Length: 237
Image 1 (tube, helix red, strand yellow):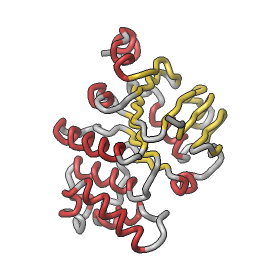
Image 2 (cartoon, one colour):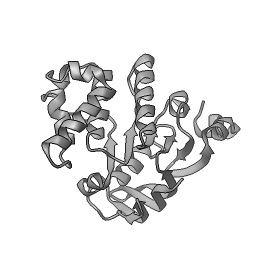
Image 3 (cartoon, helix red, strand yellow):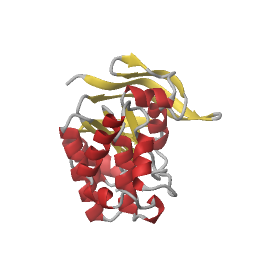
C-alpha cells in the first residue's frame, strides 16, 4: 500500500505552548487509520496541523508525495484533503443543501457539483429528505451526517474526522461507521479521531495512540487493543 499522508517529526501548538511533539505517522491510500487518546492528548491539535488550520512549527508533512506544510488550508482541500472538525461547525442558518454546496467550492462545473451532491445523498438518504431544512433544526446525528457529507462533496482522497461519535447515540454511530466503510471501499482513505475505543477500532486497520502530544503506541488495531499498556496506562480504561 502506497503512502498518501506522511508526517515526520511534526510539531505544532498555540502561542508559546507546543502541544504536538515530533509526530511520525503514515496513512496509506484507501486505508482507515484510528487516532485515539484521552482528552487533552493533542488529537485535535494534530488534526488541525494536518488540515492547515494551525501552522506547523517543525518537521515535514507530505501528501501524495508533495510537501504541504506551508500550504494554506484551502490549498490542501484542493489537493484532496478534507476535515470534519470537532463540533461540526456547520452553517446552522443555512439549509442542508446549501451547506453541501459550500463544501463543493473546489469543484468546477455544475455537473461536477451535482454529481457530488448525488453521491452524498446516496450515502445518507436522510439528507435528501432534509435538503431544504435548516441545519440548526436537525438532530445531532443528522448534523454529523451533514458535516461528513459536506467534506465528501469536495471528493477528497483523504477524509479526516475529529471525534466522530461525540454526543451521539450508539445506533447513530453504527450507521455512520457503516457509511464511512463504504466510502473507504470506494477508495477514500480515512483518519478518524475517536475516544470510544470500540467504535474507533471497528473498521480501522491500524491505530496510533497519542499521549501528551506524542505517539506512544502504534500498529495493527488488534495488536494495539491487546497491549496491556493500551487500556491501562494510555487510555485509562
